[in-house]
Image 1: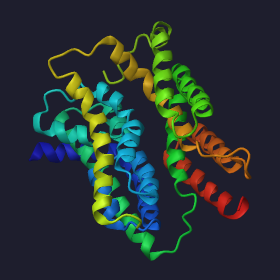
Image 2 (image 1 turned 60 degrees about the vertical axis):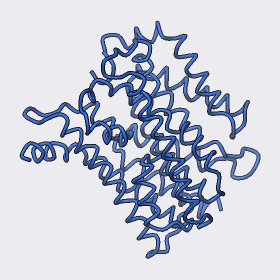
Image 3 (image 1 turned 135 degrees about the horizontal axis):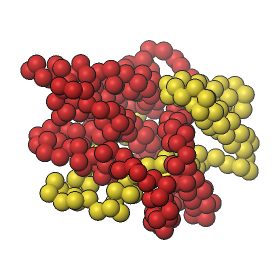
Image 4 (image 1 turned 90 degrees about the horizontal axis):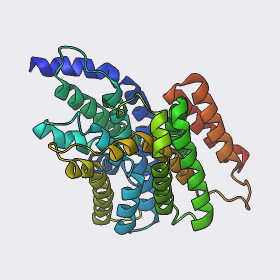
Length: 238
Length: 111
C-alpha cells in the first residue's frame, strides 16, 4: 500500500498541466455535448468508454448529424491512428506489467504518453505504479471535467458557437511544441503540405487516407537523411 | 439529442472500437518477446509531428474560400494561437485565449 501512495505522490505534480488543460477542454466538451442535447451522463459515458479527447469532439458532430456507426468507427480509426505510434514507443516501458498493462494501454492518450515518455520515474518509486497513477489521474480529470461541463451547460446560458475551436487550438499547440525543435520541422512540413494538397485533390470527405499513405511514403523515402538528423537519439522513449 | 439511447450507446461503442484497435495493435503486433524493427521505431519517432500537421488541416477542412468570411477568423486564430504558444509556451493560455478570440470573432465580428 505504501508504495502506491509514494507513486501517487510522485505522479500527481507531473499531471498538473494535464489537470488544467483537461479541465478546460473537458468542460468545453461537456458544454458542447449539452448544446447538442446530450447531457452530463452521456459526456461521462463517452469519456469513460471512448476516452480520446480529439475524437470525442469529432463525435459530437457525428452524434448531431445522424446514426452512422460505421462512419464513426472509420473516423475514430483514422483520427486515432497516431496512437499506433504511441503504442510503438511504449512497447519497452509497458513490458511485463501484467494486469495493469490493459488499463495503461486503454487510457494511453496524447497527454499521458507525453508524461510517461519524458518524465523520469523518481528514485524509490515503483515505475508501474507511477505509470498507473499518471494514467488514472489524466483519465479521471477528463471524465470529471466533461461531466462538470455537462452540468454547467444546463445551468448557464453560454453562447457556445466556436467553442469547438479548442480542439483546433490543441493541435496547433502540439504542432508548435514539435516545431520548436528544428529536427521535427521536416516531418511537420510534410504533414501540413501533403494534407493540404490531398484536401484540394480529394475533397474534405476523402483526403485523410491518401494523405496518410503519402506521408508514410515520403517519410520512408527520407528515412536515410532523417535518421541522420535524429542521429544520436534512441527511440523517443529510451 | 438527435439519437435515442440505444443508438447513442452504439455510436459510443463504434468510436471506442476504433480507438481500442489503434491503442492495442502495436502491443499485439510486437509482443513482449519480439524486438521492434528499426523501421517501425523510426516511424514512431517522425510520424507524430506529421500527424499533428494533418490534424490541424483536418480541423480546418470545411472552410470555404468562395463564401464570406473566407476562412479569415480561422486563419487569424490559428496564427494567433501558434504565435502565442511559440512565444509563451503555456498550453492552457494558448488554447483558452485562441478559443475565446475565435468565439468573439465569429459571434460578434464575422457574424
